[in-house]
Length: 591
Image 1 (cartoon, rainbow, N blue to C red):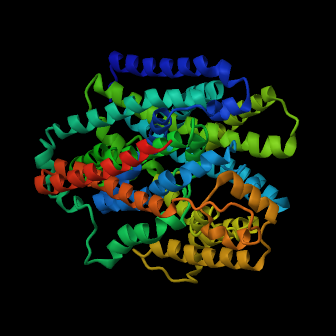
Image 2: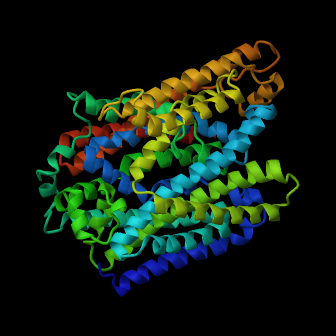
Image 3: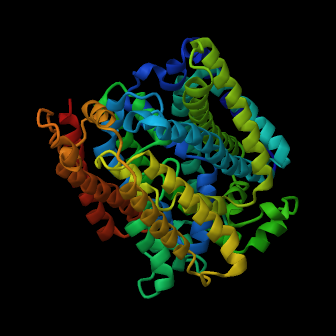
């Protein structure tokens, strides 16, 4: 496709502004490790919330949504829409607990909640396991999306794309620390949203499509529009709706949607001014991420079914794309090649923003684990702040290099998404319960982590060859179900067979974080002088449910308005407004 001088100017301006933000924040970011990784714990909710949205506005997300819509229709998105329940639980239950903990990273939490060598091992192992292994896989899926965008829209080779995307991202991430990432995310968010909406609007006017009404009535599209899967087909409704809503949201661990909060979401909460700002940030994130943002991607995905109904149509249109990089997820980038001069520059800048915002967050988050939870804790406790910042900057470069190498070997983002879900199957309940059940110990988490990994390897690589546990086509969801059952039985057994943490460790944690006392009764009864925090957990669970209904109503309201279903749209809008009044009223009353 032809890129005009105007388009290149827009892209160049985007790169320059991103770099200037990194330079602007570099001096303060270099003063200390806490400044580099937590921005001095003084960030407002709106900046943190927008950063969370920008981070999850990854270039691989519209590709993933496109793959889902083309394969399973709009209702297929429940595989990730279900994570809203996790998000709202974090908003109303866990955000304030994380902020009270005052840890630098969520891995430092392990030596606050647990004690002894097991806690130290858990912190060190997960610093490498999550900070390097998991983090690199996530960044590789983002880089894979960048490769496909660069190949389709700019004719770049995979190596050329990675060099361009990674050099600028590493530069401002390593210079500006978390504050540089937050400010760049804020700028990139608006570029990304403008580009996505503009692209969807223009694509609807393509001669091959004609209009929104024509698109929605097209034979290739009409059977893809339902918000809910076919209730008469259990092979569809179980994996697409029942599993995500009944099990997946609480039982599996996935970066950005961790049960109980964690990862870069916890990093944002820990850098907030106070508990109210931590709650406000995660609330804004969940509303924007689940309630409004998916629709431009969905419209483009539906449009791709008209112009590129089959993968073979894309292969014919883009013969230079390697066969191993060709899949349904490529359709999003393919549709963007129809955009005119000026808009294509803005959309390319928005896609670059999506890539860079996600990579920069993961680079800063991953290096925080390497620096704070491995280097400082175990290798050099006497390290100066200047040295720690240097190590953080070096680890940022190394992580990006590893992610780029893995991206060159990958072919499909959805496959990576499913593998990560499988690895995390069965561990989610621990992250929810460890704040409220005194009996959980470090060995609980170690057992869950190892069991889930072994089970994932078995179902992903061993069972398909040996067919020990028969799983027919269309029943792949059984792998996660079995993983949840096996892992949960394993960690509960280990918990009950091993000794609890020492009383002084548990009491220190309880006094600092102040969780609801109901799960700590057996411990606290031994210390009658200890004040028992009653908490407001029932009310918080109620707000979580109201908040979830509000966001789902917002999601459906936008969809119904797009579908011209006035009755459905009006009802959903009314529910969303009522839920919003309750939720925002409760938030404003917080101190």
